[in-house]
Structure formats: structure tokens, C-alpha cells
Image 1 (cartoon, rainbow, N blue to C red):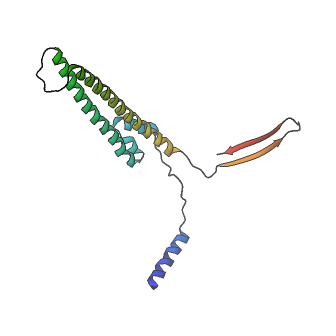
Image 2 (cartoon, rainbow, N blue to C red):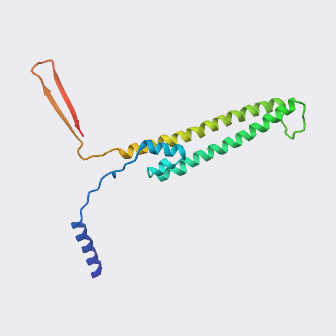
Image 3 (cartoon, rainbow, N blue to C red):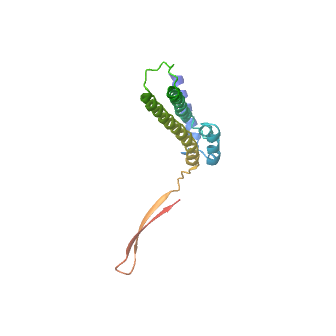
Length: 170
């Protein structure tokens, strides 16, 4: 029990004599252009550069999911399109249970889904670059204790003019 009080008193004495300043943000020299270039070369590298590690799996989940659906939809599109073309040319040796009109509708459906999946892939890639650049910009943002605001009424000699000014000092 005596050691416990000695330890607590030692910690208290150390905390009393040690002083340091705590800032809301560390001074970082993140270059937004560099973060955007990193993310455009390798998706997620800009987030790694700005130390936003938790965003990297989200980026890759979006890109891999979009890539998966691009592959699935394109494979189905090619199957139905090739089957439709071969049936038009007179080859009826396929195992599909669809008629020609259904094959045409299915090929159009999967072509549209392929294009939408490519659009989502492109959107995820572009958002990756924008996010890296914006994160680097926000890490450069300076939060300072010297921010103040003053509201002062101004009275002119004329009866027609009553003003209030608002000044913000950085």
C-alpha cells in the first residue's frame, strides 16, 4: 500500500514539472499535388502518404468490386451476343434455353451493366485521387489560438447612417 502512494506521488511530481504544448494538429508538410500524383499512380498511395490508412481498404473494396462486376457483366454480354450472332448465322448448336429476342435483350442488358460498372470503377478511381488531395489540403490547415472576433458599433454624425462592423483577426 505504501508503494502505491509513492508511485502516485512520483507521477504527480513528474506531471507538475513537465510541461509541453499540445496542438490540435501537428505541423505537417503534406503536398496535395504529391498526394494526388501518388494516388493516380497507385490507388491508396496518396492516403498512405497523408497517413489516412483506414481509407485504403475502402478504396480497394470499391475498385475490386467494380472490377468484379465489369468481368461478370462483360462475360455474360459476350456469351449472349456471340450466341445471338451464331444463331443469326444459322448455327443452332448452343445449350441456351432462350429465343433470339431474349438473347438480344440479355446482351443489351449486360452491355449496359458493363458500362455502368466501368463508370463506377472510374468514379472510385477519381474519388481516390480527390480524397488524397483534399486530405493533404486539410492537414495543411492551420488552427491557431490567435483567432479573435470583435463586433463594434459605429456611429456617424448623420441620422441616416448606423453601422455595425465585424472584424476577424487571424
